[in-house]
Length: 144
Image 1 (cartoon, rainbow, N blue to C red):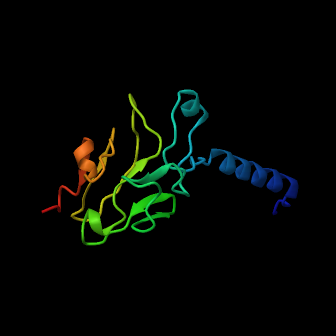
Image 2: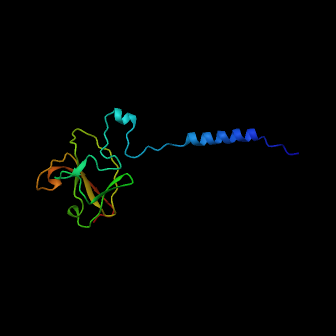
């Protein structure tokens, strides 16, 4: 003889399964945000994930009009095939920093060669690399 289905029991079981499923899901941290702990520790965002606020072109008063885009939370330099002069050029933060720790994520195109300069001194008429040390970023597997 079949037992009748107890709908209340089925409903409660389904509710428990849904609750466990939802509560166990990991919430991802939004890109380009700081945790409360990071804020308390004094970390600052250099890039907000949507605009170029806080950045400008090297030896320029504003951000380059071409050569750079913000896409999907990423500040991206567009390849020109002509090196630095063919793109939007180097960009620097408007604010000056010293005694800092820099944490970032980066990507490089296949056979790409780039870098991150820090403690930049703007020297009129001179390329950025004349006034700053550089952390080299390149595709070590495919770069010529």
